Image (cartoon, rainbow, N blue to C red; front, side):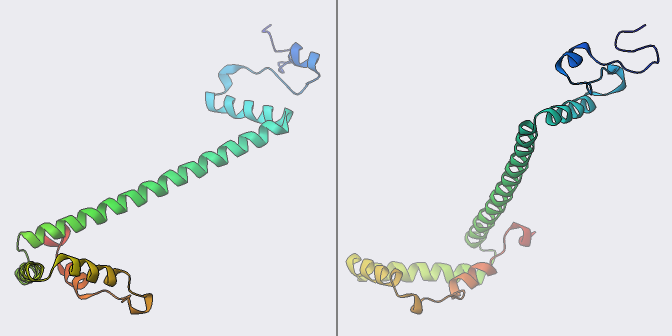
Length: 162
């Protein structure tokens, strides 16, 4: 007769569990279960004995789920930021490669005009004007897209160009 099975073929109670007063602990044939089932049964059995362990296990699994969601959110945000930055760089390349000749001409003419203004106006005055422009009150700030933003959005990126 195999150890752990009585005459009726029923699993016998472990002598250790009888000694501890835990008659519900039964020795089973280990070939009947796979590893995941054994782990599930073991964690359920431990949580039956000690409710603190059950709450700790639930807390650990909820913390793990929360961390996985946080990592997923951060990776999605990182991916979208990288895509946005690459799109802006592609637009800059298309501006320099004259993909849109009108915008490239406008860009070069504006650069030449700024260079001429910087030759005539002293740098102190330019710095003061830039500071006043940046520190203007909120009611004078334009919340809509400006002309430069509209023109910039007209430039194609690689997904639009090909």
